[in-house]
Image 1 (tube, rainbow, N blue to C red):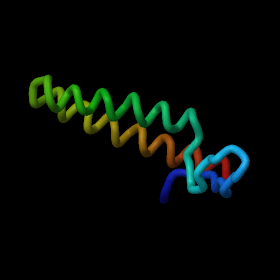
Image 2: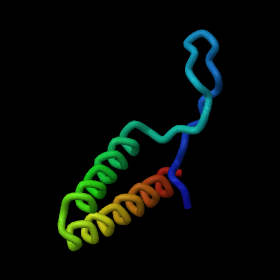
Image 3: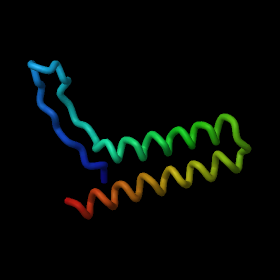
Length: 71
């Protein structure tokens, strides 16, 4: 199961690149979670990194479940 993405076609007028994108809300949740995980692994105690990794897995599972329900 993957995250829901939105396909954007090339827009010559604006120069926007084409591709598959996630929603801004999902991107913000992912960014916040990854930042927390990185800090926990690099600067925390081993238990902090483990806890952050579990939290990251839960965030991904929640995003996937929410996108599956919306489909």
